[in-house]
Image (cartoon, rainbow, N blue to C red; front, top):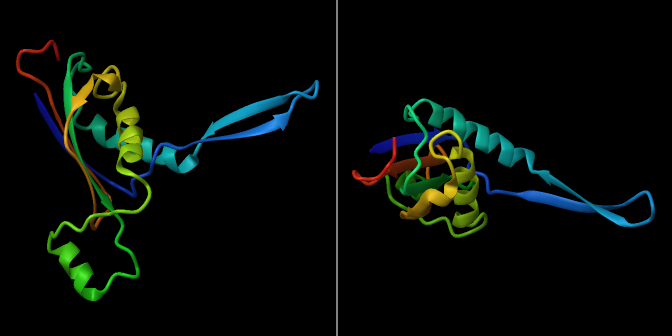
Length: 148
């Protein structure tokens, strides 16, 4: 099985914030919360995935290819912007890192495409500049697996 789709939006890394407050008896208590930008990104990914999801959640091994397109910087020269629009792959080598982007995207697909993101065992991953920003996702399963 092969599932392909594109999500348009600014990719966000998986971020969990934490801060300590003083508890009732003077002991510190950790408050943990999800970043609102990361939640919005996950919802955007889920909405796109719902349009292409299989009849049943995938339960076997899954390969995931992801190409993250990051927003073009305002500081880019006209030549560099033209190169991006022409399809040239200009690496995005600043934060967020690609594994953090992948984590939030895999989490978003859990319960929509597959049962658990632990099923993802392989797949290439890129982070480049692109317009519009977003991610292209290709999900593949072996023909002989128990998926779908």
